[in-house]
Length: 332
Image (cartoon, rainbow, N blue to C red; front, side, top):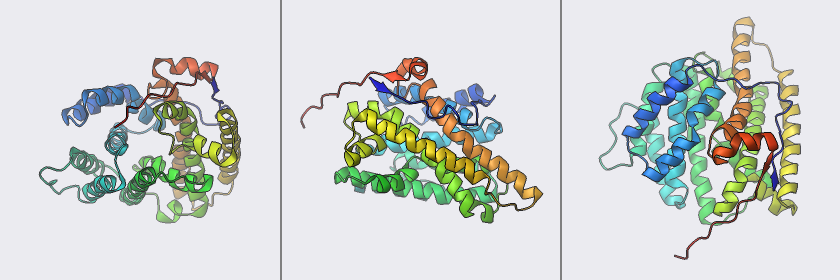
């Protein structure tokens, strides 16, 4: 049995869900299926993930349009993962480049014969810029491009069987987890000045939240990934290898580091500068947004079916999950 610690037991931000959840889920789900971007098997796996729930948990107070933008962003994340997970570095880089081109040219018709991913990304961003503040658009393009470039690096690591140290793993995983572009949805309804967004204290808080998200995600996804033989991009396997620990020891290490990061986040809030009353209220809303994300991601891990099938809520209560047997891979 694997023990999954309740890492967020003392996290001050509680679970909440957006009232537009069901409505937007149905609307975006229907639009997405119209693209026919997935095989029936992949579409079923996608539906079980229930990404609309993650979005509704992550932005409990967001307006309907921003929930839609969040759902469409999650669709792009999933598709890119689905299309590149078993590809080499060159194919993945081509896929990444077309998405970068699509979001930087949202009004340009996509080339004939191109992967549908380009058009899905283009439509997502063309819709988003209709309601997103100019500053949030800049921040999104920067952070999403960094995410995309990191996906290409991850594919190269996979192709070359490159093993990273814990420190190097964190540097790449902070990008591939997709948290920073997701945070920009928190600021789409405000004009958050660059001097706030790039302030070292604010950036450190965003990094702390990102690390909390990725640690929890890698803990809950490890069992499924080890069974599939794809633990090359997971913190638990990285810690096991570098520190010579078993699964339980590596998860305990990750949980201890998670607790330290929570302390750093809370301490960091006390160091946030003041930019005057009108800006400070925006800063508080933005920081609350990125603080809610670890809670949202953790709750979704158990409420959706991506990692534990229909047993998620039971496992959330017991904190125990049986170690899955490794799937047999047929020789090529």
